[in-house]
Amino acid sequence: MNIIFVVGSSGSGKNTLMDLAAEEFDWLSIVPREVTIIRPGEPHDHAIDQHSFLKKQNAGDYYLSWYAHHIHYGIDKHRLNLTLGPHGQHWGLINGARRAVN
Image (cartoon, rainbow, N blue to C red; front, side, top):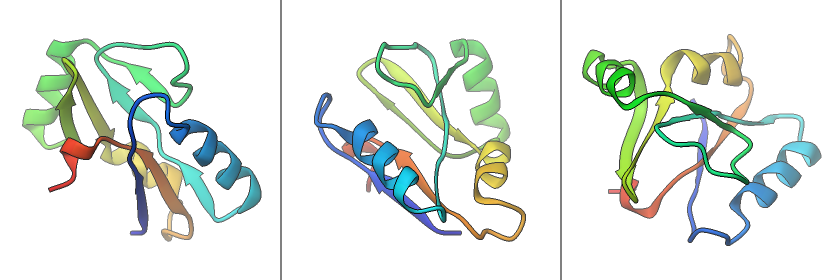
């Protein structure tokens, strides 16, 4: 599994960079996130209520999850596998947060 975790401050152009890279290279795909709040300008996010998010998190349904700025973020394992393809032929771009990198 090949993941590129893109981090930077809000408004720094992470989505723009990811969109341009995914358009340029057919082996790159943007991995959607599940978040407990939808903000304008985050086109790859899918809304989920906090109760459902925590239930999925406790069940181990997320490849990666983090909490930042009073928002829960998660990369659903099933969506990740769909994005990367059945044989992992794609690299996944994830819009992340510095606090999620340990």
